[in-house]
Image (cartoon, rainbow, N blue to C red; front, side):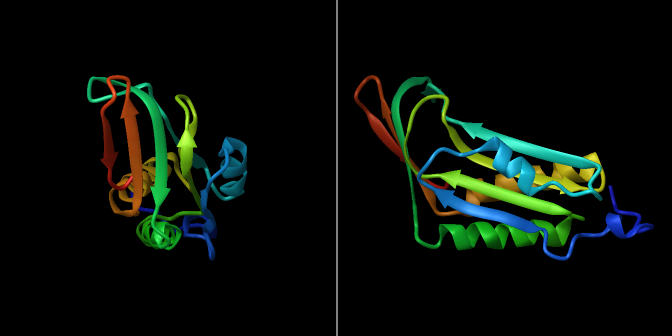
Length: 153
């Protein structure tokens, strides 16, 4: 849905990238949601990626994320690309690194836009591009003793 630009709130905000971080501690849904609050936004989309107990038909025992030193800068680059493509009022993305347990939050992203459709589309673009382009790797150990590394989230 293309913005109508009938009102200043229909346009992207001046500095919509509010929070970009890679953390080795638990992530907060409230922090990310608060970061994208904007009075001109009619829609906010939030995506939460959690550690599941299986992958590819195998039971996951342990999981850890590691990142390249450039990962946070890459997240910002992707965020700015999303902001350039959509009328984003506010955007936030936080990814966890270190050892995680089943059920832990691995990544939280949120986008607020003037309308819900734009928010959904921008949020989907943000998480998909983060997953494919940011140098974050997942190391999984399975209950059968095997393990694997998975590139980029």
